[in-house]
Length: 103
Image (cartoon, rainbow, N blue to C red; front, side, top):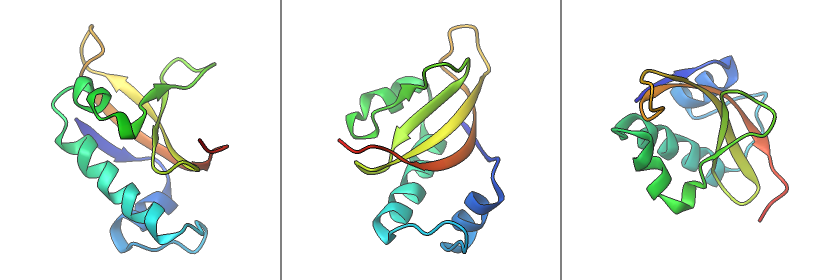
């Protein structure tokens, strides 16, 4: 899978481990970096679905919006551009880390 960062602050966070605008706890930053590695190493979408800790889900009201759990409180939101008709392989455009309601 291809991973592209559509947000300058996420890109800064990924490359340096810090962002002035994104005030995130250290465990969230670590999970963010680990999640990017998981997406990058996934062969198909099924590899992400199998990891129940990620809680991969489609965002309601969007055509291609999805989210992955970083922690109980934070989600990584993205858009996926599918490369095949069966929607199993795609490009992941990471949009933002959102503060979710928690589990």
